[in-house]
Image 1 (cartoon, rainbow, N blue to C red):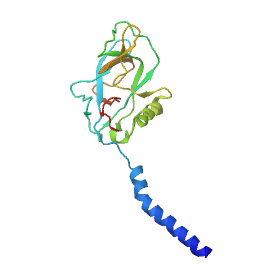
Image 2: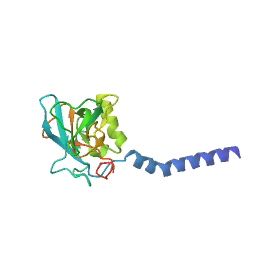
Image 3: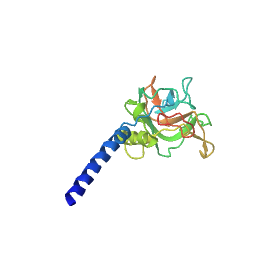
Length: 176
C-alpha cells in the first residue's frame, strides 16, 4: 500500500509540475510592452551642468518610444547640491539637486518595473543612484516645490540621444 501511495504521490507531483511549467515559463518571460516616455539633452552649462527634459517627441501621458527600442536609462543621484550660479529653477525647468548619468542602452522590454530600472542605475553607478523621474526638478526659495518637464543637474550626457525617464503619475513607462 505504501508503494502505491508513493507512486501516486510521485505521479501527482509530476503532473503538477507539468501543469505549472507553462505558468513558470510565462512568468520567467515577462517583458514590458508599453511605450515609454523619453527625454533628451536640452542644453549644457560651462560648469559641468546639463539640462535634460522633454522635447517635441516626448509624450508624458502615453509614452513616446516603443518598448522594443534600446536606449540608455537616465539615472540620478540626489546629493542636495546647491543651485549653481546662473541657474534659476522654475516649475518647468527645476534643479535636481544632484548628478545625472546614463546607462548603456537597454531594451525597454527589460524594464519590467521601476525597481528594475532603479537597479540598473545602481548596478552601473553605485548606491544612491536611481532612475531620474519627470518630477525631480525642484524650484522655489528653498527648492520646496516640485515641478516637471525638465531639470538641470551636474553631469555629462551624450547629446542627440534619448533616455528612458520614469514618470510616477501617468502610464508612460515601459512597465505601465
